[in-house]
Image (cartoon, rainbow, N blue to C red; front, top):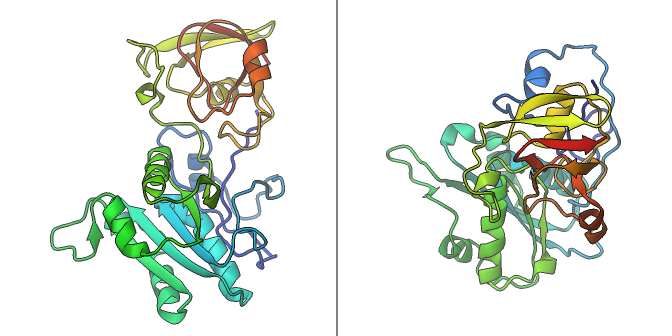
Amino acid sequence: VHTARPYAISSSPLQREYYDLSVKRAVGGFVSGYLLDRVHVGQSLRSSGPMGTFHHNPLFHGDELVFLAGGSGAAPARSMLLNILEAGLPQRLHLIYVNSYVDDVIYAEEFRALAEAHPQFRLTEVISRPPAGYRGHSGRLTRELLQAQLGEIGNRMFYVCGPTPFNDSCLELLSELGVARRRIRVEANGAPKSPDRQVGWPEGVDLEAEVQVTVQGRGSFRTKVGEPLLNALERNGYFVENACRSGECSLCRVKLLSGPVFNPQEAHLRQSDRDFGWVYSCVAFATGDVEVMV
């Protein structure tokens, strides 16, 4: 069956011969393991063109940029930074880069070297679970740490990319610092890993529980509650058109004919979708036996 994944491009837009993609291995992942272990030199893969709105817009975003990155969320920051430096653009970029462990940091040496060589690029590294004797910034990203690093907020543009809890925390912190929501861009980052922690999750439903998914007129299969419906459909041979896999573009809509589905905060459902029973399968979780039309 065909499937697709949206990966942030980490190379500069000026690099026209290839794209750099940063692939993080997901435990039990349907695609990341294949890309990391089985793809070989000379193999052909089909790709759409770059899409989305998470990029610097020089007409509206200004020249003072701050990028809050968590883990592999540094991939689009690298692309933006390299574009600024290679094209000789006037923007100044401050990357505040948060990782759990020192061994998790990707592009560490490159970022440090670029910060040393280019005054318009500032790097702040934060390790939330540092080893003994670590001398840099440590612990969670807090309002106090952000305030100390940023000083006067001014008219800066903020970009946020990381796991969903990281993104939510950054939004809250920036709001507390008085940053207007229109000055914050957040990169969608897939289905939530812990939907059962969100408001509205049905009481007593375990992510490891099994449910039956019936595709009208085409068969049925069993899957775990904690697997997004789109992933489960693909894993069992059913293709659904998709692009963002983050609940935004709506290409992966399927009609829910019966049964309970949880739509997390990532699902940007339109009122018409709710009225007529459509769900965005990339971020929808079947919390009981369901029937869908694909």
